[in-house]
Image (cartoon, rainbow, N blue to C red; front, side, top):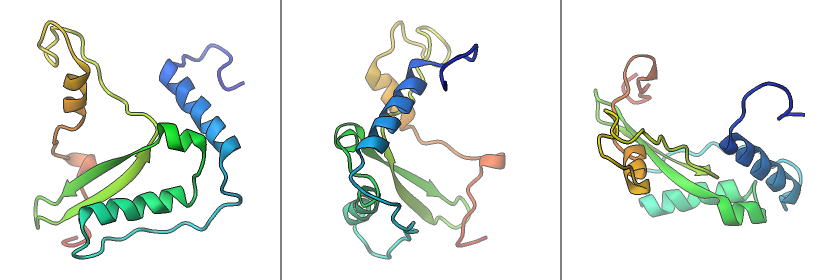
Length: 139
């Protein structure tokens, strides 16, 4: 019923819906373990931080779908005022890559490669206005 009617849906929406449904049915974790807020640990190696975040995620999600499709995305946000950097390691089952039209002002080149799209995805950006980073250190 989710994909019936006149609403437009794309392949990515369907893939997310399908993978999520399969994961829910195949998840070996019974019940709903309590939520754990993950906080920065001063001096912790980045690889240890990523492993800690991954362990918490896998403590709630254990299925063949997670084994095959799930990855971890590191995001860093730095305060332009005090320089504090916040890092999170979020799980993902797919990446939404913008694919600019060849020759567009965004793409510029005659053809666009997957590497070009990935480089654009990981490109540093400055958050402004309503998207501006709220820093807990300098408030």
